[in-house]
Amino acid sequence: MYPDPKVSEFIVLNFIPLRLHLKKNPGAMERFGVQWTPTVLILDPVGTERHRIEGYLPVDEFLVQLNIGLAHAAFRANKFEDAERRYRSIIEKFPDTDAAAESQYWAGVSKYKASNDASALKQTAQAFKTRYSDSSWAKKASVWA
Image (tube, rainbow, N blue to C red; front, side):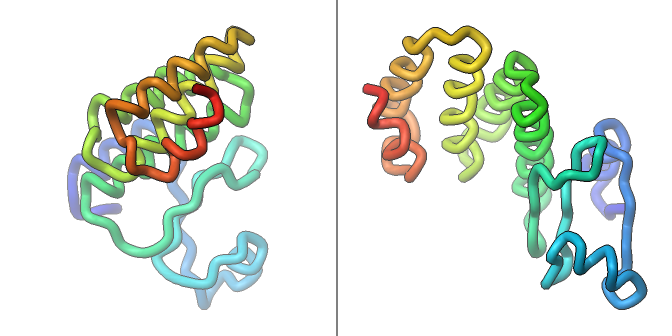
């Protein structure tokens, strides 16, 4: 499926992969608004798109995007504790990626949604002061300080 065994193993363990050829499946491509290849869509069990990856990425960046797709899917399914765990795992495993700052933001939101405790948001804003402070995600979290 994918030339890198880490990617293939992750996909087999976490997804039901389906590969469609753009020219042979124009209806499916139109349904999801696919304009460019490769496009990887992470869908929930009823077929709603939860994350999109467009274009080629190096292995680690691709893996982190697959991980964030799983976290987003858990969040949108109201599985906030699972989502928080997945977002925090991304920060630990892939701290130097663009997705790490996004994950720090959504981990705080997930914790808040699970507990209804606003201090989770304040803690997240504080965390951005020491990590990923120059990211757009830090700006989004600044209102919680």
